[in-house]
Image (cartoon, rainbow, N blue to C red):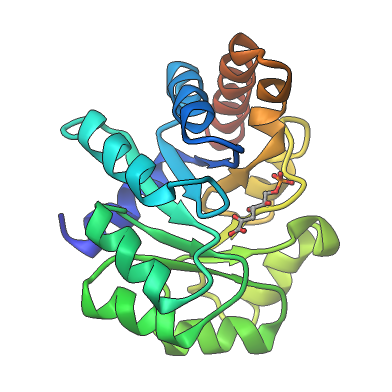
Length: 213
Ligand SMILES: O=C(O)C(=O)C[C@H](O)[C@H](O)COP(=O)(O)O
């Protein structure tokens, strides 16, 4: 699939769910619960053991559906290349890394780097990122999107860190093209409550629909 198409799928999905777990099995269970709740973009982080295998399994499982599987916490170009070989459809990192950007450009996979300042945003744009993760978004709050859109009116921003069902509307009102949520969706999994994960995913999707319709 072309890079533009992949990026479009992520943006259209509205909510990216960040998956962290201490075993591959738990990560797979979490993803099943998230997708059951209607979220279609999954960011499987490299803090999950055997992350490559989990990504490959998820890509195969959801092939031909609306679900997009990306790799998160990609800190270095080797991990980026491994994730792409495993089938990752987008790459996310907590900060910008130019070698990761080059690998993603080479293989035409969207790179969504974390940025917190105008300088970092400019570098990410220079290296071709078409979707930028504002991270940690709870440090800046939604107003940062408006501030960045002054000098960079065309920037597409995905806030991450501290995004909750209660503040989703604020982020979209400030100009976010989609939001990213970790614990806000997956926290109940720590107690084995996967139905709670599904319920949170449903709440996030309802908040997204309400904020954008
Ligand atoms: O390491 C990365 O690349 C990440 O993706 C970081 C995550 O976006 C945040 O950890 C999510 O934060 P919470 O929604 O507050 O749980």
